[in-house]
Amino acid sequence: MSAIVCSHVDKAYGATSVIRDLNLSIEEHEFVVFLGPSGCGKSTLLRMLAGLEDISGGEVSIGGKVVNDLDPGDRGIAMVFQNYALYPHMTIFENIAFGLKRQKVPAAEIRKRVEAVSRTLGLDPYLGRKPTELSGGQQQRVAIARAMIKTPKVFLFDEPLSNLDAKLRNHMRVEIARLHQALKTTTVYVTHDQLEAMTLADRIVLLKDGVIEQIGSPAEIYRRPGNLFVAGFIGTPNMNFIEATVSRAENGWTLNGARTVISIEGRGFDLQHGERAVLGIRPPDLKTASGDAGGNLLLGTADLIEFHGNDALVTFGSGGKEISALVPARECPELRAPVRYAFDEESIHLFDVSTGMSLRKRAN
Ligand SMILES: Nc1ncnc2c1ncn2[C@@H]1O[C@H](COP(=O)(O)OP(=O)(O)O)[C@@H](O)[C@H]1O
Ligand SMILES: [Mg+2]
Image 1 (cartoon, protein in one colour):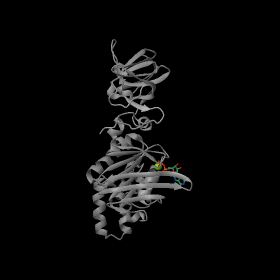
Image 2 (cartoon, helix red, strand yellow):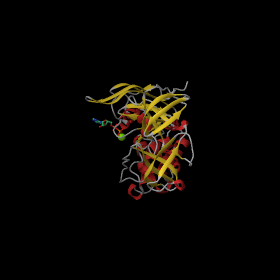
Image 3 (cartoon, protein in one colour):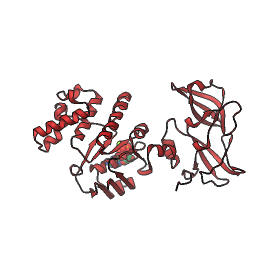
Image 4 (tube, protein in one colour):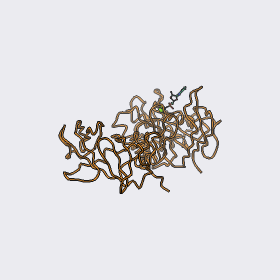
């Protein structure tokens, strides 16, 4: 049985439609991330699962039960927000215990459960302190402990790390991943940060304007983006896009654009002679070409070099188009030097210029 099912879910505020006919099924123990740009409806969708937001149309079920009209407290979920307001006048122990105390759980049982949760999250040394005596990361862990202690069927997280500095964010991301490995509680996690999504998710649900653009494992979404939006959203540095005209050739196809002619066999794609397509190549898939290299090349002049440590991002103009290659730093060219980058057919992506849909043949 699926842990969560959204069936034709709609959400509108007055005349403004925010989520449109959304269908999604989340399996038990799964870690699903809702990813998308700010304003695409991630929080709204999560809050509908939590019962904090009415559902305008369709059905949400949790654990096989339709919850549309169920109060948040009766849904078996626990939610952690970006603004994890702790009660400042209470100790950490009291903050974590608060929900159980309200449910009139006996004191001895509360103590046992607070101690168990605190141990899991490394909070036991701080139980007697007040929230202001804790760092941001420790406070965030208290917020997670407060959710965990309810032993929910489902955890919902809404950008829980976005108020933390970069180092702490990385640290907490690892802790959340570990926690899920240990507890296996079904989790839905909202973020606009693709790195968080890629590292945490079993599956990513990529949203744009209240519509699902693609659902898949991080690797599927990275390697096989279904359309231009997904291709452009996922992957840092961003994928290069070059518009090209597709023509039939003797042993396959040629793509003509950005002052380069590319020959491909094209077996993986559905192509039409004469059509315009967008060729996508990720910067790390461009390799420095040796002097006499044949095959497919992009040529240009290096006009921006960003040193990253191990790698360097080389941006070069080619046929009026800016293209970036991520190369090992030792292969970094001089500024203004001519550059030549090669790539394999396996690494390219092709999209329909008007619909933005991938031209890759569907795997059967
Ligand atoms: N209470 C509300 N009334 C009207 N519009 C809202 C309300 N809450 C959110 N919205 C709109 O719904 C859209 C999605 O918002 P939200 O779910 O918060 O996006 P995200 O979490 O992806 O950034 C936004 O365009 C936002 O302006
Ligand atoms: Mg949000």
